[in-house]
Image 1 (cartoon, one colour):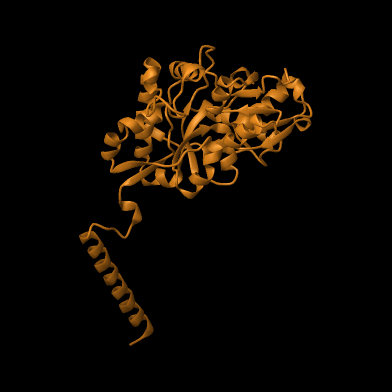
Image 2 (cartoon, rainbow, N blue to C red):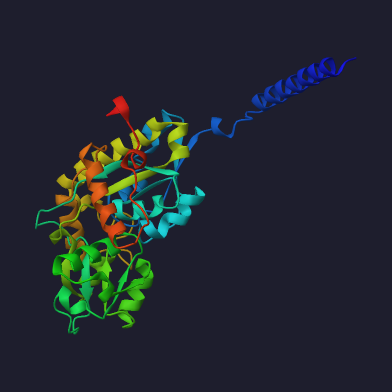
Length: 338
């Protein structure tokens, strides 16, 4: 028997063996394709307030996702998007909330996420505390100009560093005259409390918590010419499995945002009304104000690309990132799903 004839028979035997394996897997409910099972959305633990916490308690995603053969799994707790990046990169988290700034930091070294939804900046003065530069109540620092020669805690290539760079530029202070200390929010809170840093750009939940404990605000993020938008990203492998799963998540969260604006009290202390996780006093008031005046999650629009470029330019100018990100690659193209 010639070589080609022998090779043909071998290939036919291999194909036949593969067919038998597929049939056996199908018979026992398995699959040779790991992607044929339910689509699993892996989310961070949302804590005790907000739309994601409400969704977790009330199983808001379960019904809509079941129609798409998908489900959610809730994972660990992270202080910010930058603290979540390792989990996102490993796939332990595949749908996450953050802002343009830390997403750019992530995209500088990896291309396995896409920005899939955004939320406009809240400018209403009645809204919650937001983010900002804070100092201890007895600090001699009164203005951004007083930061010369000081140590300021920020999350690297994230919202904290972005807001500090904006504040310094607005005040006419060269960025290299202020020492940026790169810490995650939980580390920064400890360094701030123990006096290891002179100031801290606290973000997300850390800012209102610190203010409620007596920290003095020097500069607020919402008073700066910021292009940074809140957003959600999804891993590309999740989008490849079924983009409608991600679209459904966004739709549910948009509806919950609308509900929170109308009845923000329902979205507070979702799991615990007492104890360290429960918000009280100024913290609770801040949460309610944030929920009432927050904007609703939406799909990206063309103008969002310019906003992303604006954030990227600040990072590149200050050598935080080596080059600008391509917005066409950073955003997921929803096409006619919009």
